[in-house]
Length: 331
Ligand code: G3H
Ligand code: 13P
Ligand code: ZN
Figure 1 (cartoon, protein in one colour):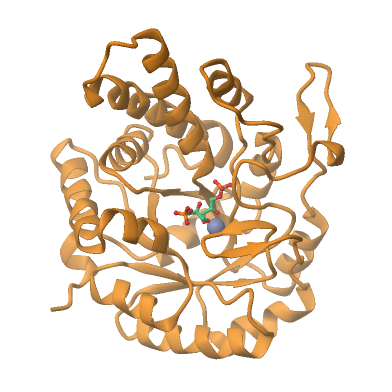
Figure 2: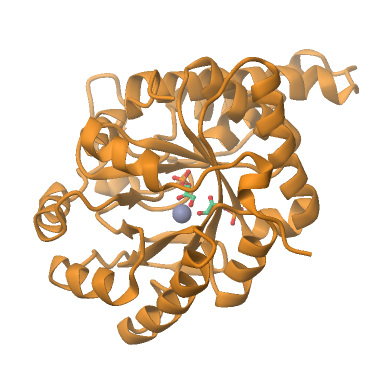
């Protein structure tokens, strides 16, 4: 049995991207794997009146069960409506690595999919992306594609070094594939350890500052594809407050460095209209869980540590939408 995303109260990304590009802000794309993450994302975006992309990786599908995830997303849409919020919500497959997984998500009610062929030879990336676009567009589902390789871990793909997107390829790639948005590589990467300390300088507060993103490449891509929706993966800031809280409460996260908020703010004003954030949420929840369990070693009710972690994640999301992406108030 197939499900149409409209029946779940979801929207595809077309309209919200158009508004974001012209309005000079970016739509947040937050990953979820469980109920507390989903509640925090939906209520954080509802309370800040922001459109939102809730995204599911293939790892999340395996972890939480794909059927359950779909019903959770549908329930989240209803929950927001019931609470009086009417923000656009997109259910998106993050880093789909085959036509089959994209098709399976489309058939089960996703309104948007990413086909990530960035690790493939250029022509093969085009071929599979095209196939996904053909299937998706018949059902009015939008497709994100990727050109260029991010350093770090992308689900099953581990890349040692990034390969920046080549601006001279983007027109050819977009026109041949028909994709609706393009993820690019300009220096972001996945996970909490985006840069080695030796690549960074220290600011006056002793905080490690990484080399800036390649805004020159982004500008060149925008010149080639005026107004076309661009996506940034690997965009967590790796907030030092949470890294320190984790380390002060029994964790061991050494030299975790992310993308400074100021650079994301700058990117959000450009054609970058979707910014992916997963690690920051993981860090915030882990920091609070560790703190609560250290302070209350006799506690064994999961609600007593997952509840505060969910609240912290919601506040983080509100802050990102308001202060970094500029999506607050655009719902
Ligand atoms: O880009 C990857 C996302 O952060 C999802 O991570 O594959 O561990 O679920 P995951
Ligand atoms: P972060 O690891 O920087 O949060 O990136 C997440 C991401 O790109 C999901 O696709
Ligand atoms: Zn990603």
